[in-house]
Image 1 (cartoon, helix red, strand yellow):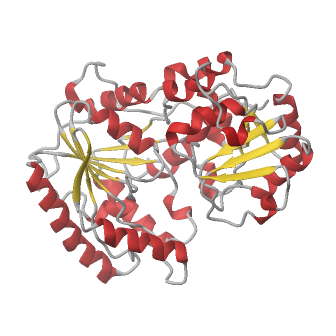
Image 2 (image 1 turned 60 degrees about the horizontal axis):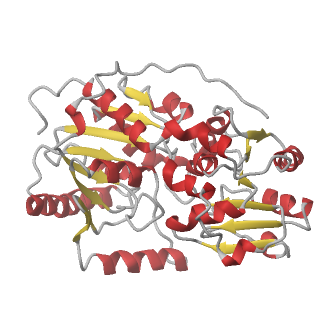
Length: 406
C-alpha cells in the first residue's frame, strides 16, 4: 500500500463552529444539471436547503457541443425541453432554474449575449422567489460572466476539477473565465492540493476543503437488511466493482487486465459510458450494467469484494479528488486505485503505479475482502455535514465587502 503526506496549506482563520454565516440566507448555485449524478455540489446544497433557500441554476455549459455527436444533440434537446418549465421547486427550499445559453464561451460575441440573456433569466427567477442579498456559490467557471452582477452580497467559487483539462473544451477560454472569477471571489474553495497550487496565485483567500461522503447512505452495504440486486447476487466470486461515469479519464484497458487476471470471477461496471468500452464488452466475465440509481449503489456495493478507481494519470486526474473512493470506503470496501494524489493522501487505499502493480494489489485486497465495518469506520467523521461546517468557518472569517457589490 502506498501513501503520501501533504504539506499543510494556508487557510483562512476558522471562526466559531456555531457561526451564522450559512443560516437563513438566499443562495444561488451555478452547477451541473440537477438530474445528473449526485456530486459534491448536490450534497452541499441539499444540506444548505435545510436552513436556507437555494436557487440551483442548471448547467450553462462550458464546452461547445458537436453537431455530429448524438449525445450532444440529445443534451441540447433536453435543455430546450426543460426550458419549457424554467423554474421548479424540486425539494423543500431548493428551486431549479433551467436557463438557455449559447455554449460557445470561446467566442466574444457569444459571451456578451450570454451575459445579457442569462442575467435576465436568473434575475427573473430571483424576483419570483424574492431573493435578497444572496450568496452566489459558483461551481461552473462559465458563470464568471455573471458573477458580481446579480446583487450578490458574497461570491464563492468552489473548484473541484481542472476544467481546462477536460476534452472538448476551449482551454484558454476556460482559463480566462476562471481567472476572472478567481480574482473577484470573496472565497475560493478547492478540493485538492493540486488545485490549490494553480488557483491560490489568483486569490489569497483560497482554502482546501476536501470532499465528504454520504456516510450513512453507503454504510447500508453493511446492513443485513440490504438486499443485493438479483443481477449481481449470483455472479461468480470474487466480484470486483466499479461505479461512476466511464469517460476518457477512466483506464478501461486496465480494468480489462484486472478482469483477465480473475477469469473465474466477475468485474461489475456500473455507470454511463461516454468512451469506447469495446475491450470490456469482449470479456465474458465483465458485466457492464449501465447507470444505476444513487439509492441502489449501497446494495451493489454489498455484492463487491473490492472497489476500483482506475484513472489514467494526466493533468485532469492529478487534480481530481474522486468522490467514489470515499463512497467505496463508507461501504466497507478495500480500494485499489492508480496513483492519484488525493487518493494516496488518504493512506487507506492501495495505490499502484503500473498496470501490473494494480492487478497485484487487487489480489492482495481480496485476501481480506469487503464489505468490512472496520474500513467503513475510517470515513465516519468525513460526512458532508462536517465539510459544510468547515466551509462555514472559512466563510465567517472572510471580511464583508465594503459598500456591498454593485
